[in-house]
Every structure is written in C-alpha cells, then in structure tokens.
Image (cartoon, rainbow, N blue to C red):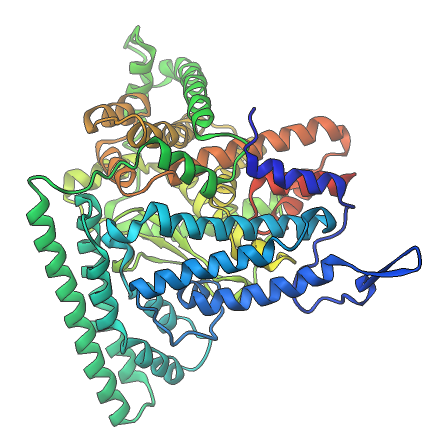
Length: 603
C-alpha cells in the first residue's frame, strides 16, 4: 500500500500531537487553552490562534462563494449571484493563494489532532481551487457548469425565512442572470460535445423554475402588485437569457459535431492530479485500478458459487452452461423480471424507506435522528440527466431542514427502456438502492455530519468518504441479517457491488486508457451484468465526469478494511454500533483522517 504525500503530511502531526477531542466550532470555550507555562514564560497556544483563523477563513470563504454557502444552509449572502467572468476567476485564485499563505504560518505539529486534521482539509480545499482554475480549466470546455436553477430552487423551497422575504431575495438575484449567461458564453472556448449536450438538457429543465415555480409562489405571496410586476419582468429577462444560452449551445454543438470539439478524456496526468485532490486516498489512482480488477474477479467467483446453489431451484430441467459467467447472467436475467410496475416506481421507494428504518432500529446498528425529516420526491427537472436517484441534504447551518431523496420517474423512457431500467432496479436491487441513497447511507451519514463538532469537516465533505459510507452500509446491512441471508439478495447485491468495482475500472479505462464505447458497454453488460439502459447511462456518466466514479469503491474499501482491522484489534470489546456512531461523528472528513483520529482516541 502506497500513501500519497498529502497523507504523509496528515499522519505526521497526529502521531506527535496529544489526543484531544475536536472542538472547533467558533463559540467553544477556549479560555483554558490561552497560554501554556513553559519555564516561566507565557506561550500562546497555537490552537487558539488557529480557531480564530478558521472562523475568519470560513466567513471569508462564504463571502467568496455565496452559492456554495446556500447548500450548507448559510444564508447571509443569499441574494448574491456571482457572475462567472474573468475577474471572478482571478479573485478566486487570489483568495486561494492568500489563505494558503496565511495557513502556512501555522505549524500543524503544534496543533491538537482535530485542528491538525482541519489544517490539511483547508489546505486541500485551497490547493484544489488553484488547480481547478489554473490547470483543469473546466469553465473553458464544460458548458454544463453554468446553470442558475439549483440555487433559485433551493431558496424557493427552503423555509429559512418568510416566502415574501425569499421572493425579494430571488428578485435581487434575478438581476444578474443576463450577465451570468453572457459571462458563461465568454468563458467557453472549445467545449466537448458531451458536456454541451448535457448543458442544453439541464438548462431546458431550468426554465421550469422561472416559468412556473416562481410565478406560482408569487400568486401565494403577500407582495404588492408593484413588487410582483417587477419580479415578473425580471423572470421574463431570465427566461430570455437561458433560452439564448441554449440556442448558442445548440449552434456550438452543431458546428463542432463533425470535428473540432474537445475530447472529453482528460488523460493520465490530469487524472492522477484530480484523483489525489478529490479522493484523498491511501491509494494512487493506478493502485486503485489494479485493486478493482482483483475485486471484480473475487466477486465473479462468489456469484458463480451462489448461481451453482440456486440453479436447480430455477432451472430444474436445464443444464448449467459451462461458461459460468454466462450462467450467472442467465440467472440474473431470470430473477430480474420480478420488479415494481413502471408507474409505481417512485411510490415503491416511498413505501420501502420506513421498513428499512424499522430494521435498523431493531438491529441496533447505529443512531438515527427522527427529528431530521427525509422527503422522497420526484427529481426536479433541472437536476435530471445524470443519476436516477440522488439526495439533496441541508448543510450544517440549516441542519433541521428537509433532506430530499430525489427519484426520477420513468416517464422519459419508452416501453423497452423502462422495462430495461426496471429489470436493473428489480425487487432486490431497489432495496439496496434505498439503503445506499437513504438509510443508513447518504441521508443518515449527512445527518450525522451536520452534527460534527468541526465545522470544517462538516462543510468540506470528502466524496470518497460520503460515497464510501453509502456503499459500506449496503454490505453491512446484509451482513447484519437484512433480507434473512436470502441467496437471491446476496446475488443481486454482488451484482450491485460489482457495479461499484467496475465504476473504477471503467472510469480509469476511459479517461486514462482511451477505452472506446463498444468495449465499455461490453464490460458493463457482460462482466458487470448490467441492463442495456443502465450501461448506456453509465457510459454517458463516465464521459461527463472524471474520478468521481472511483470514490465509491475507494471509500468502501478503506472503511470496510478499517472496520475489520478494528474488530481484530479489539476482539470481544468491539461494538458495531459504537464503531458506526464514532466513525460518523467526524463529519465528512477523508477516511484516512477519520481512521487516524479514531485510533488516537482509542490510545
């Protein structure tokens, strides 16, 4: 196992620092840490200075990133829509450089464990900002980065202040929409066809916010006729700006369709850099890819064993094929016809959630908070196009707001596509999907994250930890007895987990090894047993993102291995619920940091 340079820097101060609880919110009592007596000289404890630095940094960060602030429930700058022009990019770059310089004045070896880990999380965030602006340059080739709908939808649908006040906030933000899309066009030089098509789709979906959702709320509001009229004028201008952007994108797409578009593949050098900054792993990108190949072979072996056991039950008069993977696929195909009706897909998800929650409570697997609501809803139009299910969770500043479990209905599929999709999310896999996305996956993890005593760990979530926990929760649930050890469920889980593993193989193969679509679909359908519609969707997703698809397997592998190591070390003293609650208490920090903090606490 190779540890990257970032993690070597993280681990060193932990080893030398004393083990103290992470108490990093701004209002904590710090009087006992103001000075240390050393040979009669008063020495300022650097933890106090670092707490002050963090408070200053967080406030400055939200002022610099008011859109991001909305998603964590910080509404001080809610009326500001940043125009993504060159001046803004220069300002963001200068912000990152300035705070990296201020951060460098601290020696992480002088900080306690909680602050030392926060130090490196902040450092990673600022270095990522520099890299994305100066090296990655997504604004130049990814038109889907420009879409105003999300923040407007959040303000409209979150009751953090009265409807009238929120509409006035929206009115102020609307003023910048024309300039926003003018800047978007000025940013884009040579886009990829794939990201251009996505931008067209999602911005068409964005129109509903301004043509329907906000006007509907205006009718309900207590604003004056004059105020309503002014907002309607601004809404009309917003719609015109979005439509102009869509038309420009369509023209750009048509002009590049026969050649000249940017390749969506970023190549090995950028991929490795992005992996290091985004994932924060004990593994390099190359090592994780090789590990995924081994995991794929192990899963194939397990699935063959289950298929051999179940074959007589479902194919009494049919010999099992000599090619065992063919047999696995035949059994999966046979079982997959058991699924919910097309028009009941969203309703079935709503039905299952309380049943899964009841099992978790009965098995006493971890703490859940019934006061934090989960709302299952149809995915808003402006968010459709990448994933069929996702979670929108409130941030730590507004932790009591609703968490939305977005489930996309199947009305955009024809009959053949819908049947393929339903076979993919059959009776067994739909349960695993709900475990992953909701309980005890993303929804539960993010509720815990919002309660972290470290605001830094709560607001700067690590994707590999967040996705890794959701994947870990699937296997943990089945191991605990969910589904009564039904071999059919384990077979379908193995197929699902194989998808996680193959995500890593596919992503690396496409972005680094130039895998073509034919080979990619072959990998997904014949080695990962995915339905055609699902495979086509995954190929599309892998062309629209890079590295993110590896976060699932990377986080899962690190969490599961850590748990097994703790079980071995603690023996009879190991308690699964206590492990889960402790692990989740560190916010959404990178898994290597959580591992180190938990080990230090045990010591």
